[in-house]
Image 1 (cartoon, rainbow, N blue to C red):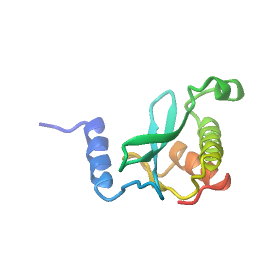
Image 2: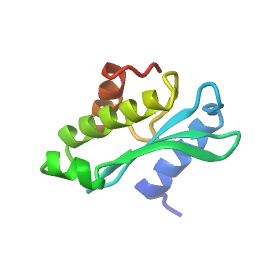
Image 3: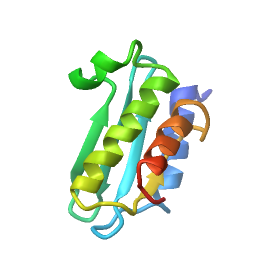
Image 4: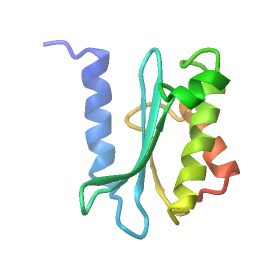
Amino acid sequence: MKINSKQTRIHKHRRVRKKVQGTASRPRLCVFRSNKHIYAQVIDDIKGITLVAASSINLKLQSSITLGSNCEASRSVGKTLAERSIKEGIENVVFDRGGKLYHGRVEALAEAAKEAGMVF
């Protein structure tokens, strides 16, 4: 049976998740990119809870961005996530790109989060 691109991404994500583990002291910054939006959350894998989340669907962000599926929106989400994380006292994180390449929107989100004060 032929493997499609979604199954390939899931396979890559599972392979990465074997190595990337978020803890209370250094949670995991997980990124999911769809065709229309981008989502990011900071997760403590030991407790199994989401500590901070941001996405391009957020109404406050939608007023400042024109389209949820471009690099500008990704930068806004990254900056917002970093600001919320720093308010919660989270600066050091492990970056989980979710099986996607570190390029384009994923890279824009990561770089914006770094510029806003997060450390990977």
